[in-house]
Length: 363
Ligand SMILES: *Cc1c(COP(=O)(O)O)cnc(C)c1O
Image (cartoon, rainbow, N blue to C red):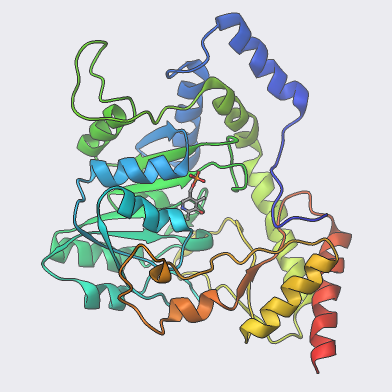
């Protein structure tokens, strides 16, 4: 079986070397030496000022929303993983959906401006598939309207915009290091900010609010991760450039194999100086064709995923303020094909020829 993704694993002996160190020290969690080392190395790799390793990408979003003090209306994208919207609702905010730019799949700044009111407290946008949002235009909108910007950058590890990490844009960016993500720590996540005051809030909020053993800065939660998860990150981090190159060549082979078909691909934001090939989304002309391809692949034990379907404005626990949106239209027609570093060339070719055969039978 070929799944849409497969977790990258280091050699077992490399991981065991880290485990031996954990056994010697006896410290399993609570900001141990491996967590601190991973935080330092990620900060260097990404070129960011503050980085906090947390236990998943959802708690990263929740802490970011709390640290930014968002409580009311937040303009957000309907085209993302459900955690983007559910974290807002979980934190007591009201998601207001802005539509997306078809092709790019990211939030449309023009639509953000339409949804802005004097109730708007913030913007939560996703660099979906690692494709940077219009970060300069959004920064301008935020400045003019005095609202905070959080980026769900769960897909954007290693992405650079205008020569620096895209995580440096916005007040806070959050990452997911779940096993299915480009860079993973089994379960895990990260929070990035360049603002020292926000960094202070984030650092105590992820540790129960502690200021020493008996005092508290304020309310907090348990966002800590363990030495075991940090060890996985330390094994994978040195491989990231190689992993991104492998993914790039897989995407190029798919594109070459499928070149004659009426399919559209992600348009990468102008100004992107490094893309990470975290997903390979394919956009069909109709949902019917997508379903035919998805089912035929499944009959051959190949699992594509409808990232991201349904459009989040249609969830039954939100107010749907968008109808007939680009997001609903796109989410019904987009399929992510299997993409992981050790996907074999012959498997890419098999997947491609199955897709070709579905189109041939449709003629
Ligand atoms: C994976 C993902 C999350 C959630 O991350 P977890 O680490 O699984 O909690 C949030 N937002 C987006 C866009 C994601 O893809």
